[in-house]
Image (cartoon, helix red, strand yellow):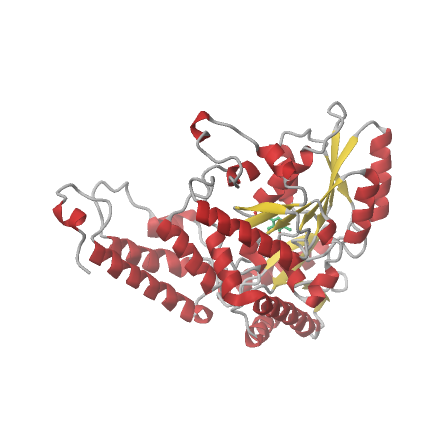
Length: 474
Ligand SMILES: Cc1ncc(COP(=O)(O)O)c(C=O)c1O
């Protein structure tokens, strides 16, 4: 195809390259991305580096003149990609990764290439309609209330914030100070959301966990009674459906009962674990999640979508429109009887996050996604068993797919020195470029985390990762 007349006749400088150049650049980009994905396993997982080191690779003065886009692509692939922490890497076991599948990449390309505006119906009706469908698919995949509705957010943190804003609409007594109950294993984004929403600093009531790291429901009950006696108004319980530290699931059926008894909003932070409900085993573990008033999910974690996609579902969607209703004279052309997504969350301009999610779900189908999630859980159990064979290590087996392990305390050794061996193991693994782990604190004691949540990870990768760990263990 030749250049369009617009491009050929214009004498003004244009931001876009010619049509032929666009095509060549697009092909080149796809080629490079696929090359990158095709040998992920051979690449280093990550490299620790300072700002000074990395800025010496990427920093430049503000460009005054244009550069060829092909040269910009080269810059990225030669200078930025080689040292990128690769969360797609099959032996990236740190944190809770977001390993996008190729369908997710295609969806992200569609979104970037066509640039839909999904804040209002008039701005992007077909894509809004698709988001409504995908929200229904997610609701159905989890067995959540068919009447529920929600919105795709930038991630789990925004989903927790959105859910707590919805919960606030339930507040009956506006004079009494509010309490929100979270376990000591809850994610930090909940506390941050409470602070962003302008609640008092003593709003968060931290409920201790029991020896299985689950919220202690007896302690929750006594905290509720004490707070009510002291004139406080309990607003919400935030339960974990997969803690970040160990993937623990709080006792959701009991928490449902308590919330009903006290008339409290029940929010479940299922950012990590929610999609495990696609599997038979996960559905059983997550029993009670379906009773929540609101749910946080992260398609960019266990739904194999690219970074930047969370989701909040709310049983009674009116709570969202009450929390986020807004008006502007410039919005008066919008149909009020259609879904305007800006009324369901804090954003007006919103990208088509739905396209990667739609592509992943439609491309794989429910059964294949369930199979992949089961496989991640199986590989995590395998990792735990192999680590457990090393007598220098003690292991916490995964509920979902996070394995906790640490060096055993030696006779006469201080906890400080033992913890230093955990840190050294993590640093040596990272420096090897072969695998990446992370450390955390459980009951104040350090522990390493080995997460499996990646369709690129094979049984061989698990065996390799464990043999590196055994090599670096001291
Ligand atoms: C349980 C839990 N909740 C919330 C979040 C925050 O999600 P995001 O990083 O997508 O904002 C995370 C992130 O790992 C998480 O594990």
